Image (cartoon, rainbow, N blue to C red; front, side, top):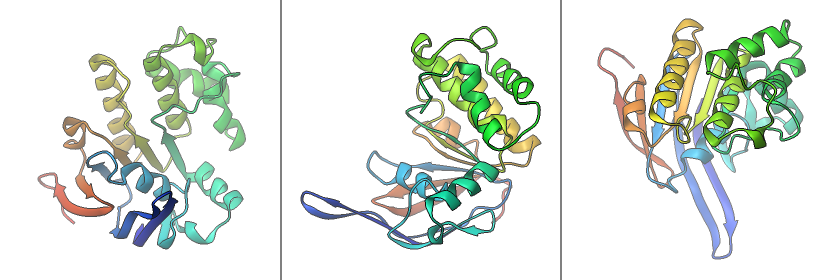
Length: 226
């Protein structure tokens, strides 16, 4: 999925290297957790793998497409066709209700039964009574559940999640974790997540530890082969 990946940005002090010579292969249907200290490059790596950002060097492949050679419109089409993304900052549209936020990507992708599918996934994350509420009327945890429902709604081939349980209470967080792995298992979806929760990370097939933009450690669940 990624080969010799580099990411540099220009800061006041000069050029800053966020990712350095990073190689990463992820199998279809695999669940992978990326862990590491703040500033280690986790969220940057996730954004590049999902085609939301471009590397300054190396290659990124997603669903048979080399993302680093595509323009933004082309990358957007690949994302719409193959991916779902749970952002740490939710990224909900403030003028749309919870139901409309979930419906939007389905409508853009030309899916059928948009309303029914959106209602069903919102019910699954415990928001059946909040369909017509706007983001400003929802708590942080409820907004996170809308964001997760939106990412799941189209049953993507690859689901990227940045701290998916970071704003949720323990009970809701556990239900979301169950949903993550149900989609991974039942639909054969690939799951790639960034998390500080080592309990969540340990449930994945692989755990990759990132330090200063380099993978320094890899752990595999017992019974999972390379």
